[in-house]
Length: 416
Image 1 (tube, rainbow, N blue to C red):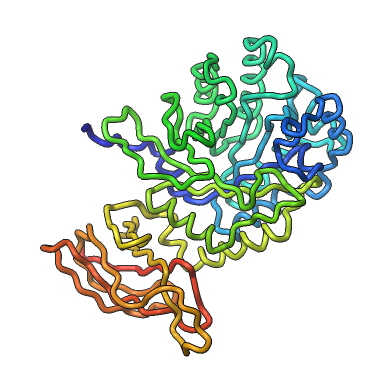
Image 2 (cartoon, rainbow, N blue to C red; image 1 turned 90 degrees about the horizontal axis):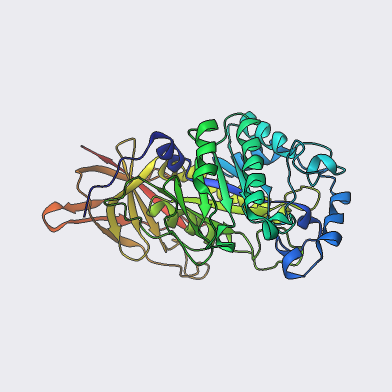
């Protein structure tokens, strides 16, 4: 079946980031009806483009957003430099006057974003659409459009220092077109040789491999499956991107938000298969983070302050449990066991049944275990290990009353 290729160092570093923030923000945010409002509400571009005249970005602060990402335990941020409506949050330097420099904001918002990220130790990534609802050449002269697209991306690759990567989206709109990806990605490699290149395969093609220069496949709104890299010419990472609610762009009438429990479970499910989790927020029309999204991110950050060691520098190692339980191997030589559906200990009059306590059994544990404890309180756990039968089991005690981490992680010290 072939060997698994060795990942390039910059791809391995991307996998270690583990958890990132996706931000959708643009003119559409002022309408508070999602990022596809121009297309789906059939707003003529002459009417829609008037939103540029009210785009103040008065509350947008790249460093404040980076601080929030840091509190949330996120290591990188992907911001929409240009979305499908064609409006750019950066100085297009004469390519177009449909950008933030020609709005009341009158500033390069991507420069503010990149500087804010670096000040807080967050890695900045730039999202850029490949389709365009605004520029006529996209429909009428595709060759000319591709030159415009490449010149636009080149600005992002040359004017903002070292970036973590470029995140593209839109080739699925013209699946039979020649997108001249060799030229686009070649330009990126010349200017940003260690930038992760992503080109979203689309909602209905989860994890599909694309051009050879792509560094990570995408799983949009769907949990990733294990990557089969055997015999591939290049090691390619994986990333799941997901909305908190129903929409990528801000919506004032979106009540379909996921719970923090679901989001923590999604994060763990991604890391189970070695994939990153890119969780989206949509800023308001003026560039604020909505209070609900901020609170949810901070709550996940609280979880990561307890269990983050098991998330960032770990990798799949063939350890499987029953149900959703699984194990990962850490760079520190330890093993980490993720336990779901664990009960709360307490009087039956006040505790709602939420799962079981007792033995949790795993297969694929090939190291000798010296000790195992809960990461949250350090409680030592009893265990048995029978390598001949490929069985490892430890006694999973319940949560103390007043606690429930959704997914609890036990840390095992090994001899080898």
